[in-house]
Length: 210
Ligand code: SF4
Image 1 (cartoon, rainbow, N blue to C red):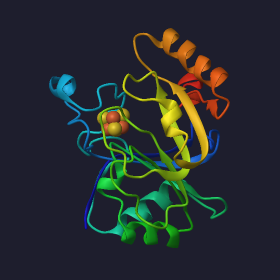
Image 2 (tube, rainbow, N blue to C red; image 1 turned 120 degrees about the vertical axis):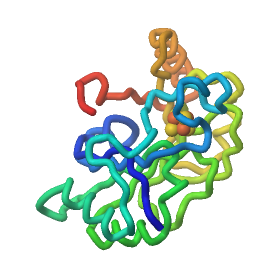
Image 3 (tube, rainbow, N blue to C red; image 1 turned 90 degrees about the horizontal axis):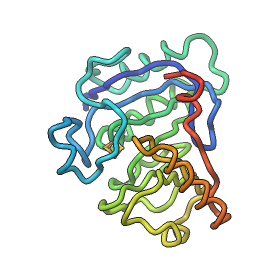
């Protein structure tokens, strides 16, 4: 299989349980809940996306003909040393492209593999840290993992209903939108009302990292 990568770069993970960790971000092109074109946003299942995942023209992006080539690209971005190598595989929707061959190739390069998915496609076995971020109006089939990250508020999602899902951590993250102050208030209110949920912020945006 070949892989279409929007961008790939070395940074610090900005959000979630592993916030602050050095990581290579591997952003696949394409999503199954939105085309990525503004003209289609109003008809999309997911309408609040803040990410450009169209094409392969970003920094470190491109087309890779096989899993070994992509894993070597990720390893080169990490640089020297194999200690605590971490790749965050995201998108778009990474499960459209992350297959077992790439999981094996990244492991061979010494990486722990963290994935951020919308959960509408079952996760490939072998992932080391699975974060699912449900989107209202979609059918989430992947209801277990390490981290459930709820972007909030989202009409049509009941946080109480998600608490039966099998995750180690339940995180609420204010939606990055025009009404960001109200979203932060709503996220704080949820964490205060339901102690299962912890507030997470997008620290990379606060401190100016990619
Ligand atoms: S599911 Fe994720 S990548 Fe896809 S449109 Fe929504 S926020 Fe963007």
